[in-house]
Image 1 (cartoon, rainbow, N blue to C red):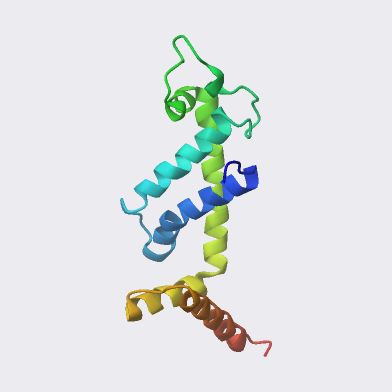
Image 2: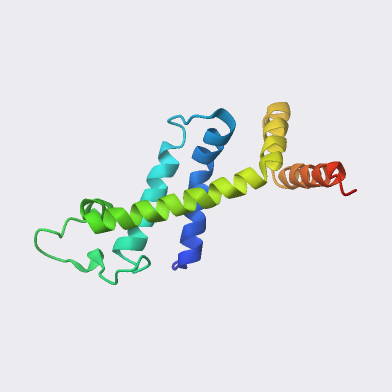
Length: 146
């Protein structure tokens, strides 16, 4: 993939936020486990802000070729700029909230996947879909409207 849309990049950030949000929801605390995911999400958000014009500003910090700002560390340049940092933080906060809403509304599916992983130690391909389908069916069967 050579190009990605803003919605695709936001979805990647949501996925990266999933581990941290799951820890918050299920354990009430976070660990160092999602640190790599958070770094990835920060990098994606900084690229959206500093290079792709996807956060309100059309200035690309990637265009700077020479001078004091020519450091190749785009993420560092974006985060060093107060407006850039604020834009990155806004993207990260927004996508974390989306991940939180999704995980809360599908908590039963996450619990079913957790239980299946504890029982089998590994889920591959169709096994994952079977667990998800089973959790959806169980929820539907437990619904008071049935």
